[in-house]
Structures are given as structure tokens and as C-alpha cells.
Image 1 (cartoon, rainbow, N blue to C red):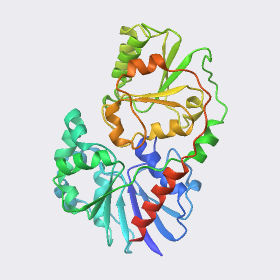
Image 2 (image 1 turned 90 degrees about the vertical axis):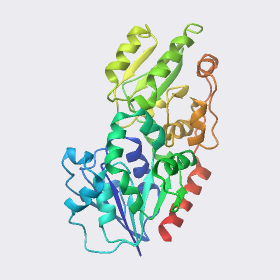
Image 3 (image 1 turned 180 degrees about the vertical axis):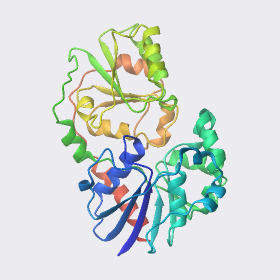
Image 4 (image 1 turned 30 degrees about the vertical axis):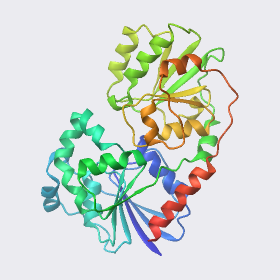
Length: 350
């Protein structure tokens, strides 16, 4: 039986957390011994959801250790980890020093890091990431292989890290369509105006997600069409900025901000289209979730490289204006998920 250790910072609300949850609850792991190491108690899922998985909670490092050089941290901190050898140790987070220290410190035949984002663009656009990068950039050289969630983030990763001699496998994120359909049917105290064409954004309110761009597009769209409404579902550091922008663009009648929720699917199921104007992504998980629910997808053309086989738009404003109400058909994404599972089994069994 193969032994696999997986390290993830936490299981709160977020794309990385959701992708790991989908992977662990959609694969047959009965032939593996899987140990999941977290640095906080799970928030978005019950431990009961994990079958054949042992969960360990480890104390995180003091916050300011994030900006200490990684090689220095390796000499300062040694975690007390199970005294057994794993066939595979996975750093699923790729941002966390704790995950890296443990993945590289545990006894393992192979060590793999998951890459979730376009780190070249993230480094260029985010001061916070540049500070973190300066501290942890040396960790990449210690891994044996890497997994990228889309083809579009591979070359930026190679260019930024300089790692050209190690295998990088592209494995997109599993989409748990069974759970999405089930959760989309839960009753909530919310109802859209069905006489309007309704659009939704779901995600963190951050600079990366380009909500400011989306609001500017929507303001232009309502100059030509008034029977539309946009819902922003989420939370994050740019909440105040977004509220101020909605007011300055006089969009109060056309845009509603909804707080982040553990289950966004009953909200999404009521919409006609999902809109995504991110400056960059790793893979737009929410696009695939919306596709499963039968929503039309409106997203920037440059995001196509992170999402194979779905088509973006060269003109978001025009796409919003032309959006029509339609009968939605659920898509189980069977072939998409099967390919991913087979790739994961192949990775685990090597």
C-alpha cells in the first residue's frame, strides 16, 4: 500500500482548499495510506467527509517567520512528524513555509509541489507576494517534481524559478459536480429578479480578481441595457475599495454585494451567467463550477490559457449586453474529471 503525506496550510474558504477537498473526496483512496497535515482545524468541511485519510493538526510558525529566508528556517525549525517513510510527500499549498518545511523534512522517496497560480504575473502585480518570494524562492530547488493546475502557468513558473531540469505535470483541478448539484438545491433566503438577466462573480475580493475591471465593464454595459444585474459574492481586502467604486460609478441600483458563504451554489444556480475578469489565474475553478450548473461563461480572453477547451471573450461589455436568458442544463463533466483522476492515480502509483 502506497503511503502519501499531503501538507496544506488550512481548509478554509479558498480555491486551493476547494481543489484539495475535491481531490480527496472524489478519488478512490482505499488502496493508499493517506496522511493529511494541516496547520489549523478544518473550517469548510467535516472530518467525516474524508474516507481512508488520517488528519494531523500541526502548530503553525509565528507569522513573521514568513519573511525569514527559507534556508535559515530549515536550520531553525524541525517539526515532530510521524516516524515512517512515505512513497510521496506533497506540498499542496506552494505558498506556505510550514508546508515546505514539512514536505522537505519528512522521510519520503519523492517530494512534489503543486503550483496553483501564474507566479510571474503574481510577482509583478503583488508587493506582498514579492516580499514572500524574496524569502521563500530557494525552496523550489529541493523538490523532485511539480504539478501545475494548467498548461498556462508552466512557462511562467520555469521562467521565474529557473527550474528547467525537473518534471512538471499538468493536472487540472477535479470539479465535484455531484456535490455542486446537491448543494445547489439547498434552500436559501435569497431570490433574484427573474425579469432581469443576472450575472455573478464568485471569489475573493482581491486585486488579482479584477473586480474593479468588471465594475467598469458593467457601468459601460448599463449605458445600453438597463435590465441587467450583477451580484458580487465573496469577501476580501478590497471590500471597501469595491464599495466606493460601486458608489462612484453610480451602480448601486445594478450591483449587489453578497457576503462570502460556504455554499455559493444555490446563488449561482439562479444566475444566467458567471463573469470573471481576473488579471491572472492558475485555473479558474469557479468557471468550471458554473459550467457544471449550466451558466453561460463570460471571461477575459487571456484567461483561456489557464482553462483548456472553454472560450473567452475579446469584448466583455459586448458579451454582457448580448447575454440572454436561457434554459440551463447541468454538465456532469464526466470526461474532464476522468482524465484528471487517471493522471492523479498515475502520479500516486509511480
